[in-house]
Image (cartoon, rainbow, N blue to C red; front, top):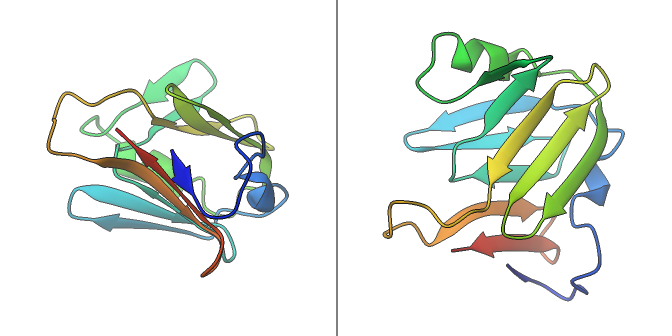
Length: 125
C-alpha cells in the first residue's frame, strides 16, 4: 500500500463510516464506489455478501446486488493488509475487495481510495 501523509496504523476508510453508498460506476474492467464524496476504485472487482450468499463478478444478478447497496449506510469499513478491504453496511450486507496478489501480473493497483486531492491511498500488488 502507498499513501499520502498518513501513518500505516490509521484506518484510511474512516471517512466513509456513517455515509451512504451514493453511486456505483462500472468502467470497463473496474468499479468505482462513491460515498457522498470519498470514492473507492476497485480494480480487483468486489464481492457482495448478503446473509450467507456471496456474489462475484460474472454471477447472475451481481450488478443488481451491488447497485442495491446504493443508499445503504456504512456501519464499518476496514483494511486487512494483503487480504481485503471490507465495507459493512447497517443492514449487515458487505462489499469486499481482495488485496491478495492477482493472478493477472499486469495489474499493478488493486484499489484506490480518494478522499480529496491530498488524501488518497493506493493498494499495489
